[in-house]
Figure 1 (cartoon, rainbow, N blue to C red):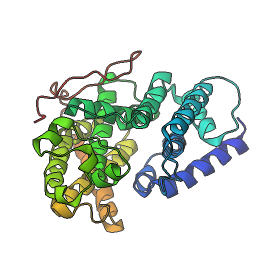
Figure 2 (cartoon, rainbow, N blue to C red):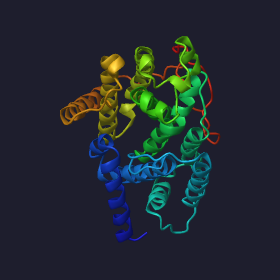
Figure 3 (cartoon, helix red, strand yellow):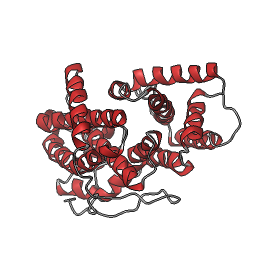
Figure 4 (tube, rainbow, N blue to C red):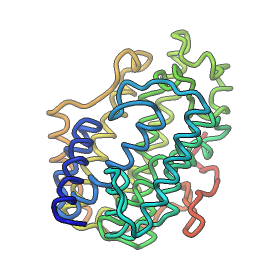
Length: 327
């Protein structure tokens, strides 16, 4: 690929990240230039796939799609993703971005397809009976992104990859807690049916205001369940280059603060969408630097065997195992 084509790809990716995720845009500036380049290229592909399936632009203004249209779009995404693993040039910037990352960092085909499987779970309207089922969904839409990002940061150590996956799981659990009502209004629910049954809530009535006190309890439970995964990811920071560790720690801190906001708001958590302001992001950046440096002075602890775990490649589908900490 020519230097001009590479620069055009990077500009497209930076535009995508600036509109689609201000939090990731802030954290990505902490990477060294080469890592940042690959990280934003990967983000551009992830963002594009998400937008195509949800009928939206840069994560906003979603337009409901018919199941048939969504399945057609998913099939097209899978086919185009497969072409990113060929040597032939690609015109579409999102898939050319993926191809550039694949060629540079050896991203496994199974991992890219695992992300699309998460979108398929949405398209199929899958429901989740247990918390382990919810975690499997989290793996597909976020944990596997952590794996790919860790490879971009230069690690192939399975133990470090597990920590990267843990951060994705934690962030997605936070996302689910924050977006419970918005998701329910478009027919999606990621809460385990076992949890809903405790409060006599159905998926169809989840968004009704009368259930807000119960949703506050369940959102708090999600945030509590995210904590051991945040802690596990933090313990793995010492294995990353220091600028990558700083970026990862800062991103985790931003999401943790979102969870704190949701917990503190109680039944009013969904009156407005929880987010972090500029000062909070700055605090997360400084805290992330301290955390990443401090972790280099501590012994690298073994990962908690009670945490839910991905299955190793070549079978990248996560295995089901109900965590001992789940209620």
